[in-house]
Length: 288
Image (tube, rainbow, N blue to C red; front, side, top):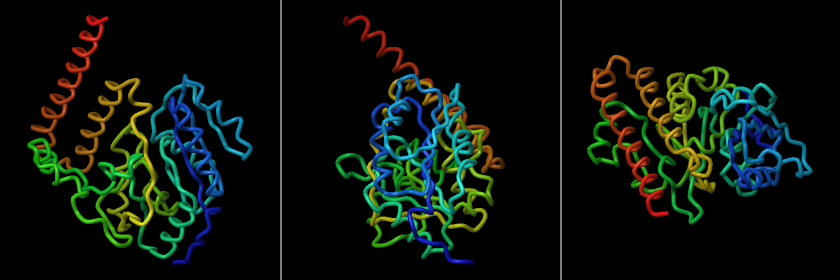
């Protein structure tokens, strides 16, 4: 396999935005300091003017505006069609890259040719590693154990942070550095996922094709999180629950739990969230 270059100019940064507010501008400014080869922003019908904030930036940015929210996976495929770089960085609009982050990830990918996808440690503003930064892929049995309170079955953060880059079953989808050849081999993201679980599905399919997925612990990226979803929590929750069942039916279709217990637990959990949200709204209205 021909070694790749390790320049940030070989990286296309792809950002899908939906009402990202000023965080989108901050995210793009941080990316620009990394001198990427391309920046492609796909705006999924934002109503907050966040995409307009990019017009004031001096550097060239490819901005695609959709009249409807077509979902994260479909928007990513749009963005990839506009790139010609050897590496892709799928970045949430509420993530802030430190300087030289792109170069360090590109160098790690060059030196570890068996890796198709890597991610940094993803932290909150206070430097605490976020849930999902290091994790296992979901299975029906793991999800059942998780629902019964065994959180460590999915979350690997209780393990010591490794000294160097290592392979893991799954990493954060907020900042995914992907080799274009690996992306093309698995045909990218599955547009059957609207929001959530498309990242885990991608990691699973990459590993099915013998690519490794890993974390680069020497690099940390801040993920603010929750800005866009806070305005529509039930919609985001419904997408997450739908995505989970699609993932299980796609990768664990022959497991009896996928078709029996998991749908009941899944939609029962969503119903509880729906009820809490409605009761909170009623209580808020009554207190005014």
